[in-house]
Image 1 (tube, rainbow, N blue to C red):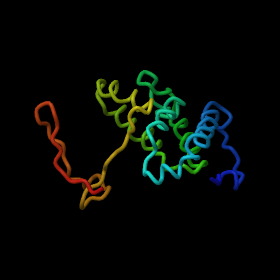
Image 2 (cartoon, helix red, strand yellow):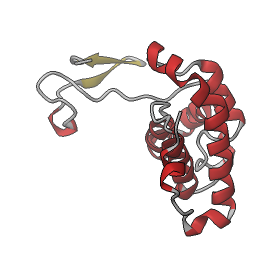
Image 3 (cartoon, rainbow, N blue to C red):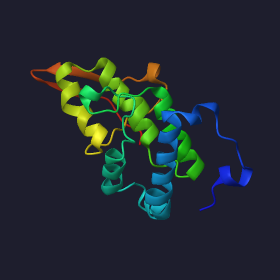
Image 4 (tube, helix red, strand yellow):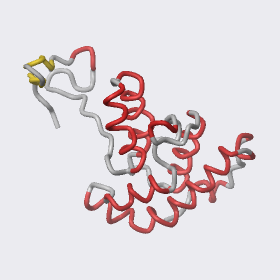
Length: 166
């Protein structure tokens, strides 16, 4: 796989000299060695295998900005950005780490109960669980304000009323 950043000989950004830059280098190496060689297989199967997610978690590439108390690395969004940039430079953008790290985990961190945080976040950080979202429905597409699906409390559970497009 040809790396577009190498062809263009892009300079490293100013932040690349600190620990964020070291994380970028490590993420780039991981994506180049672990993901890129199997990327065609992942594309064909329309998924990255569980083993690769677990390896990414062990390498510290999942939930880098999540507090350590929930299994994250305690970094900032700059750390997440470095990981996403490395993914883009290697050309393996279908991995889904950006969604997992920067959307799903923060939703739970900011809006989940303490019980939910302790139950789900450590498993997202290790790759044991893979974060995803489903936000489309007939007539609304991904316009979240137009979504009609509702979750209604039913005893100690929720009943979801609505339709999914995909």
